Image (cartoon, rainbow, N blue to C red; front, top):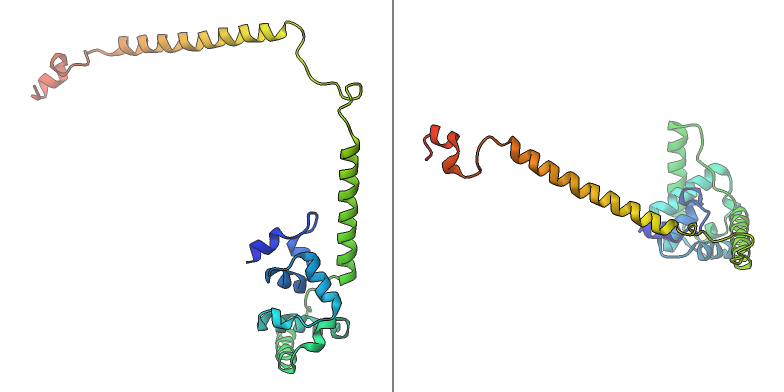
Length: 193
């Protein structure tokens, strides 16, 4: 499922750089834009995600002190808050560094808009360019070069064939016995014939 979601990440963005809530929503089948729209809308999302994932995200928001900045958190049942607090307390006891922060949704929006603008500029530049022979002449061989090239290729092929014939003759000459078992002295001495 995650591999399918990664394929829907817009060009220029990396899966690992996305917010965790965006990634989790994309795993459910949403596109990047749909996930951002849902998160901005302040609608509940916890019912779309596995419970442990909601608890983990709540734990991160508790750690950062950003619960009030996350619109969908107001729909999460109290039991998830309590579980998130327990997880957060356990993490703080084991590791006092804190949890990795997510970028703001606005930053995600700005990055997507910047990428769209860059793609539009590139596409516009490509469509404006033409095959102008004065600016970018086409490649062609010098007159008569094609015939010379074909003649060289024919000589190379003839050499390859000649080498193979010589190798076959050398191989035959190096054999000290005939290929038939009756005339081979080794077969006679071994009592095979």
